[in-house]
Length: 571
Ligand SMILES: [Zn+2]
Ligand SMILES: [Zn+2]
Image (cartoon, rainbow, N blue to C red):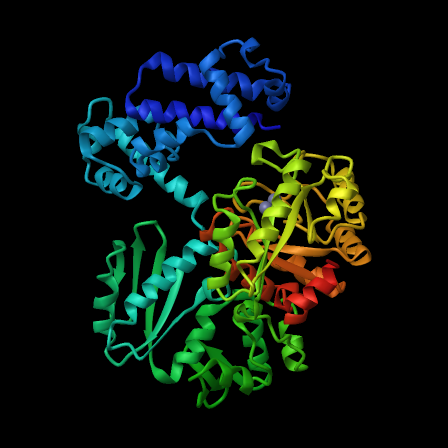
């Protein structure tokens, strides 16, 4: 059912029109229609197909046309145009609880406010209360609204923190007084969401380093500035802490500030058992307080009697036992990836041609790329009819000739219907190089039915991979109800590889389930689920998640040669 999606889009249009100061009756029409659609019992897609939209009260010809476009293409030109007419920051302001489009428009027109940062500053300076329709109470409520927003969305997705962190790092590296620098904290462990950024530096002139740190152009606010520790807030609200430490403590501090807390608590316990004391300054003799180690992380782990533990494994999920027995996995690396199995092209809902995707894949040094457009019933994503599948196979064959060093696989992301059957006939499925299956509709089934639906689909002989196995969208949509153990068992039995979807909003399977599946001898594929060539870089986050799930090269098909892959998928 696309009803909520259509309703949300109409609400968004109404808000944008209000921001633009459009006529009241026009915006009211959108809100009324949104409410009506939200409350409909019938599937809006069916209504569109039957051409019955205009029989719904409040939906006239113009609105019916827009809804049809939205349902059939998943996009609306009118909305895209509107968005361009309104400064982007204003759309963010609308997400502050209690702040409607009328007030946002007034803030923009009178004070030129276009971001949450600017709004906070103006409210703190008492500037808002001077506006007509605002007062001290409104001002206070707005500040409270900003706080609430930050509390609920205080963490950012891994890719945002990764980009912020690395940009900051290259700026800091320009400071000649820094002799060594590392990102620490949960970003170093590549967790799926990040609260704030921790950076650690080595320098014999810490004050010069702090000066350089707070003068970064992306800094919105300096929260604290001290001789060896400072904190700033970036324009996108991410907090960054920098600490400068001494050489003999650098490794111990890096270990300490990388975490996780659970890992560190356990590690300190092991240190004590050995007669040591471990803190951010180093490893010391428990009785004499004599310094034992601390310059590097490696020497700290070694002195405590274990193998070096990679940051992604530091979650107290069995890494200590493995480190003591010297059985830690040799984790898969980003450099070991030879291609991407999950990319959408303009044939369905992607924005680039197969030719463009192939040339970018080649530039990345990939030896293969998998083009996986949606299947026929997914009309909202422009899924391919059986006839268009034939045309696409033909086109890939043609384009392939121009890329002798790149194998372009023609795959599909085939929808699993509610009864567990697939969205293409066997005859069609056989023609693809490989078949991904995925859930894109009816997310709200009960656990048993959903599990049976997927298990039945996996049982299909043509199926190779299962896309985004739990369907979650981090911070936006919970996983559907499913018995993951049964899915893992079925994956093993049917030899279906589970995907680690590398799109930062998904990272699905997650690290915990990956390890669980690996322990059951299930194997994996990585796919970025790219809908644009810019998304191909997300591979990095899939690899990071695989590492957090203890995966090695042999567990992941993307590390194999084209010949080995062809053998395994049976083309
Ligand atoms: Zn999908
Ligand atoms: Zn996809």
